Amino acid sequence: MRITLTSVVALLTATPAFAAGGGFSLANTDFVVALGLAVFIGILIYFKVPSLIGGMLDGRAESISTEIEEARKLREDAQTLLASYERKQKEVQEQADRIVAAAKQEANAAAAQARADLEVSVTRRLAAAEEQIESAQASAIKEVRDQAVLIAIAASRDIIGKQMTATDGNKLIDDGIAQVDAKLH
Image (cartoon, one colour):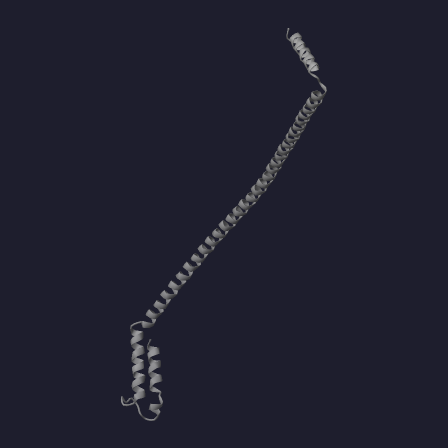
């Protein structure tokens, strides 16, 4: 410390003011400023301000280092969490794909079932229509036959009525009664 103080005093005393012959006069402003600076630096050194500032800077460096380490840990946690969410998102996407595939399969199966049901329904309706057509044909044939029988009876009545006499009619009635009597007894 003495060497430092001696160096400071030597530097202050070797000013151009001394070369001009001014000396140590308090009227010399350069000397007063230099002396104030030397006293201020001396006070700072006496109260160990440089070591206090160094300690504060070291403490700040340690706190910054701690904050950096915490930031690294937070970053690692965030990356782990991000990876977890990405994995979950991938699993959910795979599950959604499976659900969509299953829904497509079910839709295809339902469409196939609907086609089969439609074919059965069409076949059943065709069979019913054919039965109705056959029934209508049979009914039409029966009506035509009935109509033909009625026409034949009417024609026979007209022909028999014109050609038959009263004695022939009585004879036919008697023959008919005899036949019924023979069949009943």
